[in-house]
Length: 122
Image (cartoon, rainbow, N blue to C red):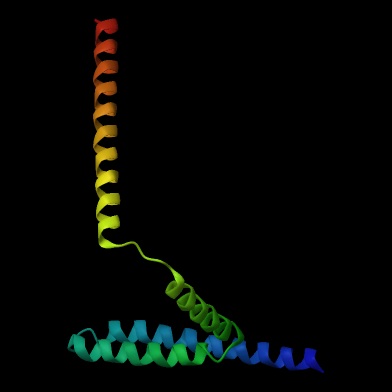
């Protein structure tokens, strides 16, 4: 019995994804077709179609699992310990210093190798 219910869900999911694809295509084509209209109207139209497409997509099995993943990601982001302003500044300065030192080392190595090659060739 459960297999039949899943088969029906997947069949309806396919129809829902087709509807989402048609809405996205309608948004792109409509935006191009109404290119002479003010940008505000076109943006509102595309946003309305995008919201409707997202609502339909959230009704599918994959859409619901994506929404659950997004909620879990938000919870995990709240658990992150973000660096202070001082830590960020110090780390940035260290990175800039290392990049400058490496640039000087590579410049010196390039100059030395260039000098050696020109000495050997001439």
